[in-house]
Amino acid sequence: MTEQKKMTRKRVTGFALMLGAGIALAGCQESGGSPFGMFKKKPADETASPGDAETVTENGQKMIERDVEAPQVFSVDEKGLWDGRPSLGGVWVAHPNVKDPERVIIRNPSNGKFVIGALFKRETDNPGPKLQVSSDAADALGLLAGAPTELSVVALRRETVPVKEDKPAPLVDKPVIAAPEEVEQKSLDEVTSTAAAGIAKAQGTPKPAAKPVKPAIGAAPAPAPAPAAPVASAAPQPSTPKMSTGAGYIQIGIFSVEANAKRAQSQMAKAGVIAEIKKEQSHSKTFWRVIAGPAPTKSDLDALKTKIHGLGYPDAYPVSK
Image (cartoon, rainbow, N blue to C red; front, side):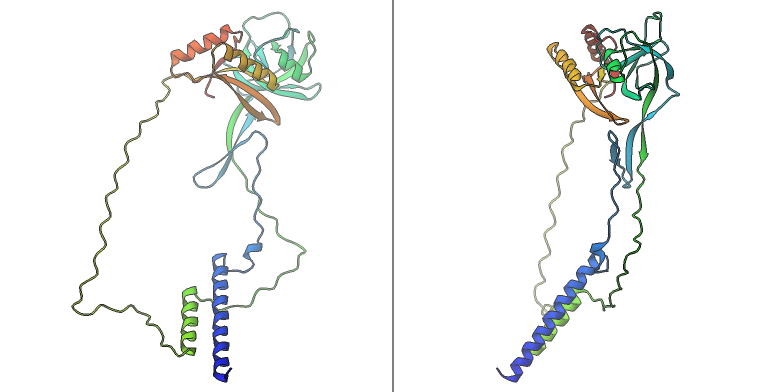
C-alpha cells in the first residue's frame, strides 16, 4: 500500500470519528444538554389512599376525590339498638331527626370498629334508643342483639382537592461528579457537511454545491402543486338524549359483605329489575352499593322506586350514581 493511500485512509477514519461525535453531541442536546441527564432521579408519583378517585385537570394538576366527614349535615353520639331480627338493605341506621337519606360513617367507640352505611329517617318513634341499627351494621360493629350500645354517626360528603407533589430530597453525602469538559456545540447538519467536505477533498473529488442550481433562462417553470381537495365536513352526530328529570338510579342498599350485595342483585334480577354492584372504599373500609336503573324519565324513576319498595326494600331512594 503506497504512502498516499495510507494517508487517505487515516483522513477518512478521522472524519468518520468526527461524524460519530457530532451525532452523540446532538443526542445529548436533545436529552437536556448534559450527558448525565439520563441519570437524573425522577420525582415519585403521588399515590392516593384506597378509594380515592384521581383525575388530572387541563393544566396538568392532579386532583383527588375523597370522603370527608360533614358533621354540619348530620352528627349524633347516641345509643343504638339492634333488635336481633335480620333486615334487608345492607348496612344502615335510622334516626327520627333525619331529613334526607345520607351516606354516613358509623363508629363503635367501645371496640374501635366502624363501617360505611346509609342513614334513613325512622318513621316510628318506638321506646328505647333513637338509633335503630340493621343486622349487617350490627355485625360489622360487633353489637349484640337487644344490647344498647353508644354509637357515633357522622354524615359523609365527597370533595375534590389538589394532590401535593413531594419534591425529591436533595442528595447528601454523595461524591460530586466532576463537570464534563466544555465541548464546542455544532448542529448535526454542520458536522455532517464538514465531514463530507473533508472526505471529498481527501479523495480529490470536487465539493458539492451548497445551493440548488437555478433553472436555465427560458425553461418552463416547475408545475405548481395541485390544490388540496376540500375536506368534506363531517356529518352532524345525533346528540345523546339527556335525562329529563330525576336522579336516574335507585340505591337499594349499602353492604359490608359482597355476598349480601350479590344476593340483593339476584333478587332484583328475578323480579325483572336491572341492578349493578359498585365496589367502593372509604376510610380504608370496603363496601358494596347496589343500585338499579337508569330510569330515563321522572315517571319511570318513581315506578322503579315503587317496585323496589314492594320487593322488601322500603328505604331505597334515588341517587345520581
